[in-house]
Image 1 (cartoon, rainbow, N blue to C red):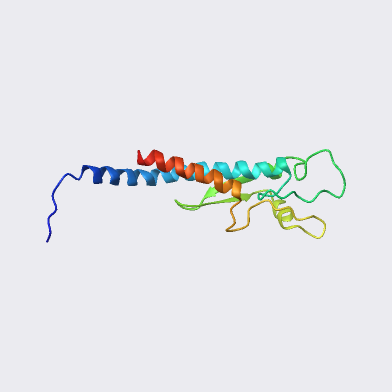
Image 2: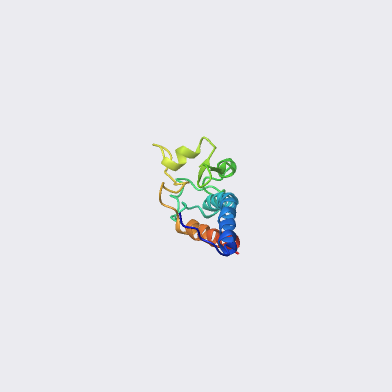
Length: 139
């Protein structure tokens, strides 16, 4: 058996910071959920999908923005944690799937990012949160 002696206060301080990082990641995840819902809501005001591509125009002109006649669909955007390290986004309004995928009579207008393809704006905003939270935890 090898016995190591010395001042391990710096190692213990680093260990405490790493432990605190776990708590930080949970609160950061909640912050990321909020950002995701904000970004989903922006798609409605801009009339575009999460990647910035414009939605197909209506067949007939109307005064209200596309997919925002009552605000119910836009208001149904939500994010939910999936454990300690991930979350999902969804729309709870039943009409979302028809508009997202399209039907014979409804043009497809993407509401959610494709699985595994995070929009660049989301990625940039998420990175800002990660960097800030990591710096705060490592102080």
